[in-house]
Amino acid sequence: MKCWHCNTELIWGGDHDIEEEDAEYCIETNLSCPQCNSFVMVYLPKDKMWDHYCPVEETEMSIGKDEECNWCGATEDSDWNARPECRFGDGNESSS
Ligand SMILES: [Zn+2]
Ligand SMILES: [Zn+2]
Image (cartoon, protein in one colour):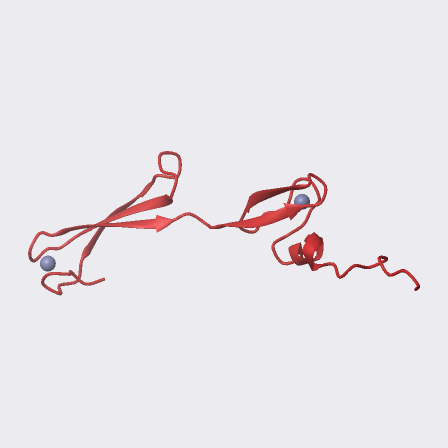
């Protein structure tokens, strides 16, 4: 990674785990420029949550990336099955 100001390759100073202290970011990386002494901090965002409507709990909830629902076992990929609005009225057809 190059320095914003002088385009010199930055020197990596270290990674700091801030997962506990910060709600948005999990890793803080600091770099410095040997040329102009600029100091650069890089924040790595935490994994995004996915929204899940749980048919077991009958409520909307957020679940961590790559985690499954504790209640119904749905994963992000299979979740569309569980959404009530995606069911097209099965068993709702009455003979007229
Ligand atoms: Zn610089
Ligand atoms: Zn669920």
